[in-house]
Length: 232
Ligand SMILES: *Cc1c(COP(=O)(O)O)cnc(C)c1O
Image (cartoon, rainbow, N blue to C red):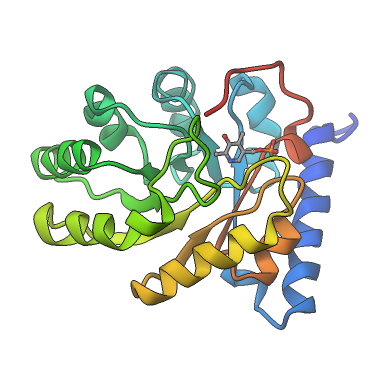
């Protein structure tokens, strides 16, 4: 790759993050294969993503359906085994596009979305893996189901909409120590028989791995500083 030239910064940072994930796993006696690195490429153009694909990264996260729809079909022609995760809020009028584009959706958080996804999954005969987002900090501006409503919502997804739920996702409040939020997510998952835990970002993935994360979503530590973007 890139013979004679310098290895791109993002590929170097990716290698560092991979090693840190493996070390965090080793520290708590978990196999490194238990933790999937979701490289969050939101806001970065395709040419910034290519070096990480060339370095072997295959799992990516995007937070906007429309942006992903512009960037990824072209990248997937070149890297057909790339796996795409939606980590941002989903509107029900985007369910069709989301089901067509994404392999995993981390942000199922209300009955209307569950219904729209169920309908589209049947219509397209595509089954992206689904995570329910929990608003562990009960922040009014943040997406996700409140912790005390989680069990009932998961039951609605399963029993009313016949959706298979693979796990839970959270984004702890920026000002909090994240560990109790990760522990709460793990507890809700365990009592609902869910194995997937999407938690941990650039600043706190080691703590998330200690609390059982199966998917860490890491953006800036790989791709660098993002131009500011409204985040949910
Ligand atoms: C942007 C984003 C991330 C990645 O955040 P970094 O701090 O850049 O690693 C992870 N999860 C979600 C939901 C995001 O929107």
